[in-house]
Length: 180
Image (cartoon, rainbow, N blue to C red; front, side):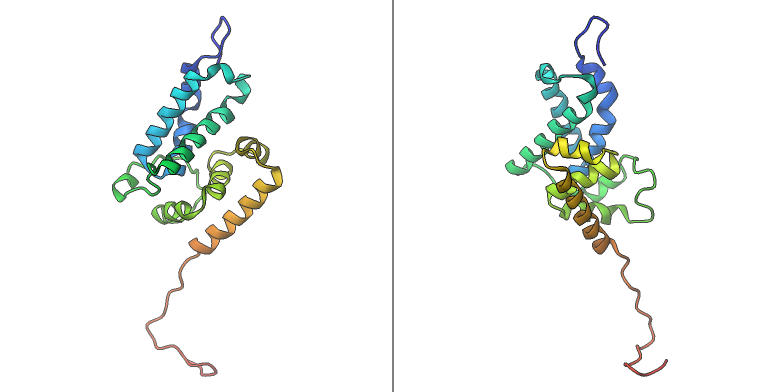
């Protein structure tokens, strides 16, 4: 991460963290184009503010915080596209390592997009980027208990929205107390 002669190098940050940041951006924005823009803006900001990074060990959290701030800024400006188009589904990056099982990816992205950012971010960081509770709390600048609470509420919401829809039989349903 550091050059042989000392200071941290943005090029090495890109090499080590690009995939992580792109996945995080994609899960936040839901769009390939927005993910690319957010990732690029993150590294541009990192280059300009590299002196603020205190240690190589904190680079991942520092870069994720920059990306999240850019994402929130784009939401405030109304420039973020919250859901991906069907054409972009084919371009979706692979990375969930079986975490979502047989869930329809389009439906998952739609439901994730419905979550407020304060619930979506910890969920993405924990399940897709494997951040610890403490790392999420530090990055979001909230207490550890808040992260745990938001994760629990986000998971409950996802469970309720992604629950398989019951299949109705073609036979007429029996009235209460009547056998079929």
